[in-house]
Length: 332
Image 1 (cartoon, helix red, strand yellow):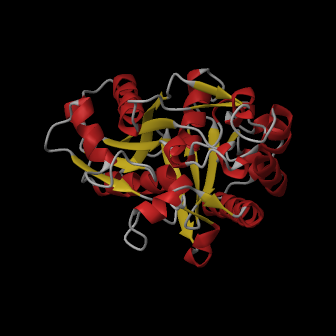
Image 2 (cartoon, one colour; image 1 turned 30 degrees about the horizontal axis):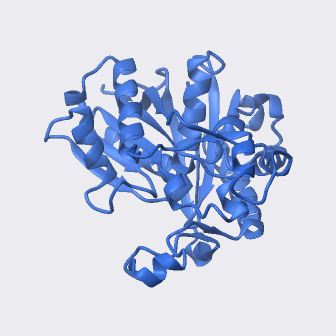
């Protein structure tokens, strides 16, 4: 009797620019201070792409690391899912550009998913579904962002929050109970509130013109108070949903890997689901909010440094523009 195909995260890889921008650096270009940023967000520094460095460069770096760690070759990859709001170009896709840079062959499918900060977990759900059907055996899901290119560096409410970064995960088939098994991924959206977090210019509704670019319509806009309320409520709710679906409680969770938006949101979500901060994975202080890359970079870091160990039950959640949010459970 054959067993149903499951899927697992076989490996992670991360890629960050070398350039570090500290809060003290920001003090020199915008009306803010290290104390103001640290107290309100928990962020101390972030990584920023250098001139001539692109999103696809750090995305490719993350993918190559995940491939190496999994012990396969680039030509073994069946599908690349690029999860980004900030591709190098609107066409071709970020995934296609990364496909060429890592040396994957033309049999490899490659396309992007745009779900803002929920992008990587959305891609993870797609990869999980494809692998379970048997259609693909090696799927790269890469959350990669160049947010610094879409920030108004005179707006302290947004420019202090975001950074550039990438992480890739290789998804492969497995049997139930195998290490890295993906137990549950759920994705939700509510487009009624999309204006609370958006980039109004640059699309077909507001094509780039001298007027729209001059007015800064290509920059990220955010209604911070509304985003806070929606983020806390929906991330906590979907965490409870995925735990219930798997017959688990928060006491069963070894590590909680939330979206690294800011410490205020992370701490409030943790309190709502009743998990102590000692079991919450954090890297927001080093990288800021890297959108689709926050959850996988943080997961990768904790696996690489040995904090998350084999057998640990890992609860994940994220929230972003759309509005969109997701929750997931992995038995590492």
